[in-house]
Image (cartoon, rainbow, N blue to C red; front, side, top):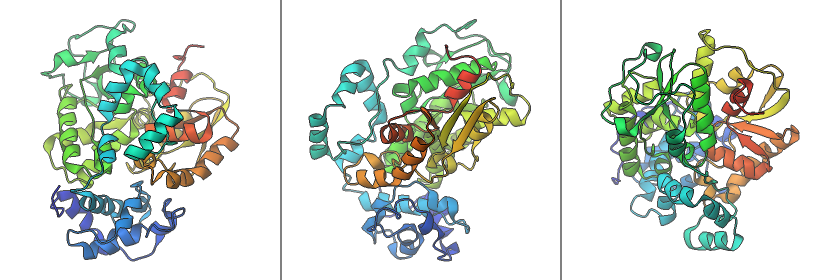
Length: 439
């Protein structure tokens, strides 16, 4: 990491700097500033401090920023407040990155270690004495929500299953939504499902969807198949989001470019669908706007990737989504994560779930759950993360539902621990309403 940010992303953010009129709306809406008095606020550590930085950090309270992106979202002048903060934090931490921040950014490694020994790994994370030692030596909060390793990886499930009428490595189907045929040099790392009257789509499961939230990935594939798509799943690695959010721009850049190359092996004109809202945000927005990645492979993938609920909402808008949903009589609270809101797609889950007869979905209206990726895992940030999430926890519990829904993985982990309730991706309800969930 260079001492100064000589990045395209920094220039893009800096271009918005002088549009700040100091209206303070970012500070009134900042979820961290509302609960952490020592945080100077997004306006101060963002556009105001940026004028004095000249490549160096001038205020260390910017590390209290959770990077939720609310400040950029609410700014009526278009100032890239959150982006400026993330870039400045990377400079501040360059050269003295805590080991803890490097370790918790290794999401693929974590999954590869935990899943083969899932029962033991999950049990170990429930041992209070062990968690206390981890907090003391590594700074990971002993009470922070942690992922639960799945019994098997998504890749292993996909390899072993034989869906109805499935064929492996068939001739290319009719391309979906105007896309081209499959051209891949990585055929051995790819699984396809079929048949496909509506053509092919690529599935990007993300790290959590590959190792921890595997059921979300499985149900997403099954819904897409049910709708008539052939789901192409290339071998894929990490998007680098956890590294980016911890200021490890160089490592994150390598990961995002490698991932883009992997996804492109599945067909360079196919729609890419993901049930990991945070990972789609990295591809669509953060890699370019924050880290300044300006590569043709990212430019290509970022324009083709769609969140699964966004994809379904687009199908519905085009009159191509069947409305043969089974009735679900329930009132379910829904929280739209920060990463989803930052992609400027609206609330597609609300639009799609509104089509299910009998289902009432109550949107939280809250800015953030507090976890903010790895932010709420850190010992010094844990209390702030819990304070930010407390109103949301209460809102969800007050609905009286036994289920809550949320689009991103770490947010679900936070909500599960904060409410004691079952929290799933919206695709679970779509899966159920299509009659795909066993009774």
